Amino acid sequence: MKQVIFTTLNPDELKILFREVLIEFKEEQDKQEKLSKKSKPEDVLLNPTEVTVLLRISKVTLQKWCVKGHLKKYTLGRKVFFKKSEVMDALESPKVKRRL
Image (tube, rainbow, N blue to C red; front, side, top):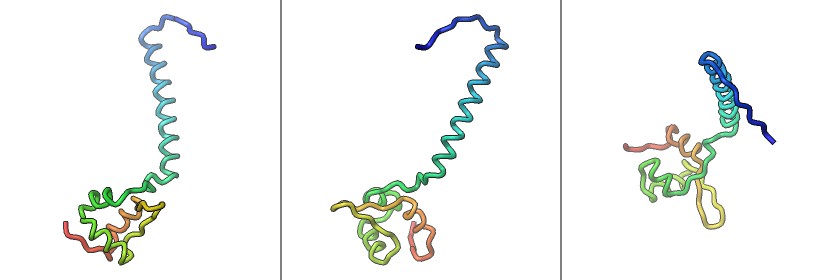
């Protein structure tokens, strides 16, 4: 069981206490950010509609890119998905010619 202690603090003591709490919070945030960078956040799966909106292309163009091998699609049952990191890499590829 946690104990609650009430005490009086002058403004300088309160500033020091807040500073310590903020430093601990910042360190924890930095640790979580490093962990999230290690596990690629770009490995998010997108459905075909999300890809067409992201790339501003039609579904027909998306299908053509899959047939030509510009994009790799992943199926789970009857559903089709694309890795966001691969979609973004395909944009930078010289193979893919787009008109914006």
